[in-house]
Image (cartoon, rainbow, N blue to C red; front, side, top):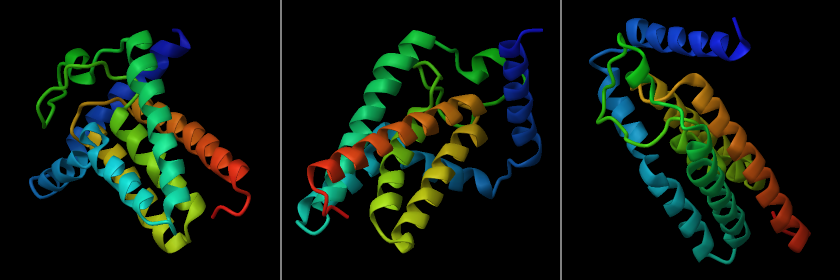
Length: 182
């Protein structure tokens, strides 16, 4: 058995375990609301725009904007089309998605990329009292994609890694341009 086949099997098993043991009538509406924050990256784009408005937070807003643009290009333009991975509900007969079935490819998770693209910038450039909640919210958005049955765990991991790279590069660029940046 190849390594890719083993990873696919693990991905599928984890999703079925989440479906069997974690889904509940109480948690499902919460996960739907959380995943909504990642739809099209709107919430995270709004955060970046708000940060751009004030001179005091503009450098963070610049880094957040660069990071989310990097993430969108790498995830939605390049990797999704290059890998062309089917959504888990199209492959796993026993998996029931809990939201409308997305029609684009699965790998990597755009919700996860957008969420961590901004949250990791905030975590690096602001005090922990802002960074920790941002990262927790991004992690909840990422988990919601698994809970709702629309992404594999490796889709979410890849989205995080793209965001990690993009946020690192963006913060570096902003600080290189202005060494006194936050």
